[in-house]
Image (cartoon, rainbow, N blue to C red):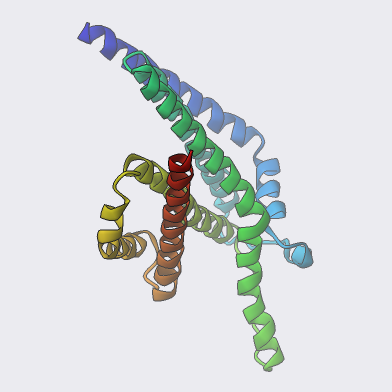
Length: 243
């Protein structure tokens, strides 16, 4: 019996590796289109004149294409692995557990897709515009900086913003799961609120660059998400109790 489960795990891992390889190959075949989409969707329309990049290494463009393919493949395969894990465990779950974990998986996928849309449409263009405004201000002050972006640094900046924001967005899902499991013990969450705040600051320190501004911004965002989620669960429980 154990050998049967181990064999199934081996096959699922093998299929996952094949799927990941196909995604990498397909992404590399459409590398120019993907790079154009990354640049065009992420930049503010007012700065279309800045759509050129410097390359200081003969292999830099190739390296960017490969990194971009790996980046998309790694993010896509996470959902695939989650589905494989769910289907593997589903045969041993009760019906209410099956429904709960299925809902959780769908919620995570929904938040992930929503996050990508919000990132490309709002967050990244706003951050790009925010940093470009410093150059315009310095130009008014008779101190001019000529900004010429490097291709690999642009992709690295995009990936940094992506990982940071994705971590914050997925924390929403974790909060919903924790608060849903502890919906009858909200007093405990309120009692240990200071401990949670300390954990949030430590977590933000680990995932952000060594800059106090990034750490404070990330911590505040996580705390706001935590408080909004708590209020939502409280109102939800009150509505259920009134019924």
